[in-house]
Length: 213
Image 1: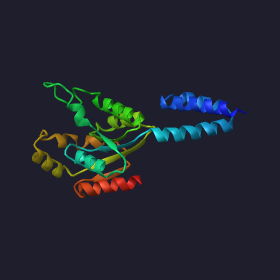
Image 2: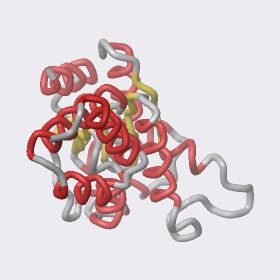
Image 3: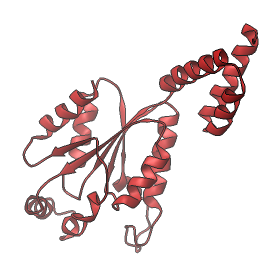
Image 4: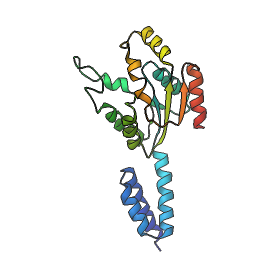
């Protein structure tokens, strides 16, 4: 049986290891000690990590599906403060003369996932506005964010409407939405589906917020 101080010290070691994501060390330590110590460690880890980590909402959909507008609406309506991490902001970092996109920057979406992880690890809630390269991006993102409160949302809209929006906005290459339409959702598992053609931005945001309560 461990003394109270020793149990507290061991729990702190476990918490420190988990926050550094050395989870194997924690499970090894827990399995070698008494049942009481393991329970205390697990409870302490769960409580501390839940308090420290941020929530992550991922909005995935083709260009012009309304992700950014929906993200801004969520920011204004959610009771907690959420940062917006947009793939467009990462493409804006690329130099002139080199077309932004996964062909020239194949690891950019992985970089975004790691950036979101850093924000969430430091206690920030994050809304991610992104276009997946199908399952590849899905696996990268879920691997980086597996320990966080993660909700992945499909933002869908008919192709005819996407193309109409694309022409109206004037700041997107014509045909971009069509080129992403099939691949963006390929083999991606979602927590919920939002249709921005059937529902208004306010209705979509309300559905997401209600699903989190």
